[in-house]
Amino acid sequence: MSTNTNIIDRKANFGLLMGGVAILASLGMVDLAYAQDAAQAIVPKIEPSVNKGDTSWMLVSTIMVLLMILPGLALFYGGLVRAKNMLSMLMQVSAVTAIGMIAYIFWGYTLSFTDGGGANMFIGGTSKLFLKGVDVTKMVETFSPNVMLPEYVWIAFQMTFACITAALVLGGLAERIKFAAVCAFAVLWPLLSYYPMAHMVWWWAGATSAIGQSADDLVKGAGMIWGWGALDFAGGTVVHINAGIAALVGCIILGKRESYRNEPIAPHSLTLTFVGAGLLWVGWFGFNAGSNLEANGYAALAMMNTLVATAAAGMSWAVTEWVISKRPSMLGFASGVVAGLVAITPAAGFAGPVGAVVLGLIVSPICIIFCAKVKSALKYDDSLDAFGIHGVGGMIGAIATGILVSPALGGTGMVDFSKCDPSACGAYDYDMLAQVIIQLKAVGVAVVWSAIASIITFSAIKYTIGLKVDQDTEEEGLDIAEHGERAYHL
Image (cartoon, rainbow, N blue to C red; front, side):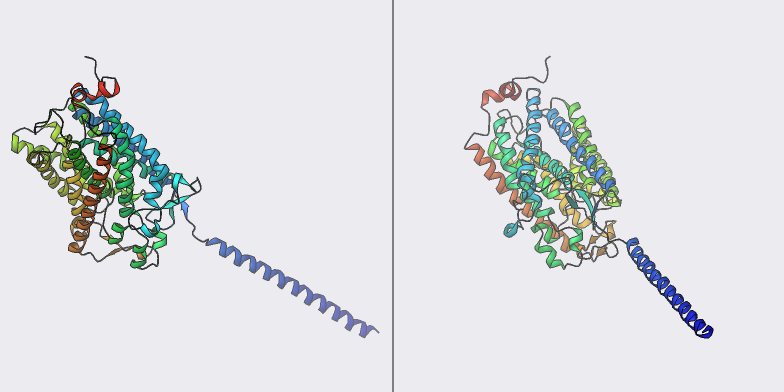
């Protein structure tokens, strides 16, 4: 009995021992499983997220672009007109801006930055009319994969671009256009010209969507000019050529001021014009550097180029005047500042600083020729030289971008967005002649599109509500005749 009992006890103890081992083993497996899960949790999947630093920068940039318009452009233009038209200039710029903001959230945004289906090469669709589907949770992509901005920030930033483009056109129409015609223009012209141009030049699928896609696939979903590979960092074609051509067409259809005799009419306050030019220069950092959408080295490059190109162009205009007329003028320096800002706009994030200086030195003498000689020879009344500075300066900048982007000239080179993940994004082989040809094509489309859209716009207004004030109103001044106020009581 005792032997059998010992055997039974040993078997029982062995069973208990093996059971304990089994329990410990099972617990170990559970711990191992938890450890594996924890290890997987340490390397989470990268999800798109809003970058707070970039968002803050874009909020500031949006405010800076608004500063360019109100009061920057309003004062710049206001100082250039005669005293009797000062308030009308302020009112026109303000009205175009206000109307442009409302129109942009109603239909401008969706026509600029959504997929246009069968017409996608030229214009967006209607999926976001009245900002349908946009709320505080919605995001849009920057130029880096999975780096996002709140969609409202993107909309507000692009809204200010639409507003300033339409406001620039007023420089060619100053001192004789009806206020009602200005309001009609603010609705109709962006619909026909600005929104399609913005879509053609800037609409594409985005950096994350581009990863792994072929170049052909990228082009299929992009605006026509973007698909060509044209470079326009901040709006040489979309803003300046577009506005400059519209100003030229508008001033021809509108007709000359009654007092215009192919000689410049003296500005009433160069002090205000200087203040306006200064505000434009400061605000333009938001315009150019903000167009990078991220606060990084490319934004810093755009800021640097905006500084030095503008400085070079201001001095180039003044020195050219000094050589021709023996006196450098403040108006000339201010005009050169704006010409430099215009020219560097398409190249701001592509050119090197030395290239930006060269561009600034070149653009001013060419703009002087158009503002003085060409305008006088062709006898059109571009009141404040909107075409001579913005149209011509925009063309020079857009074409020069194809040259100055060259790494051999200090430029950034060009990025292959079909390989644009963080480890593979880089410059590809650059062909200067091919790129310049692409830039010329983009300029040609911008000129033709804006001209046709502007002819339709101004003709429609002229033959409905009328464009031009009568002679008595022009002689009295638009301040009193159209708004019942005076800028000055002296």
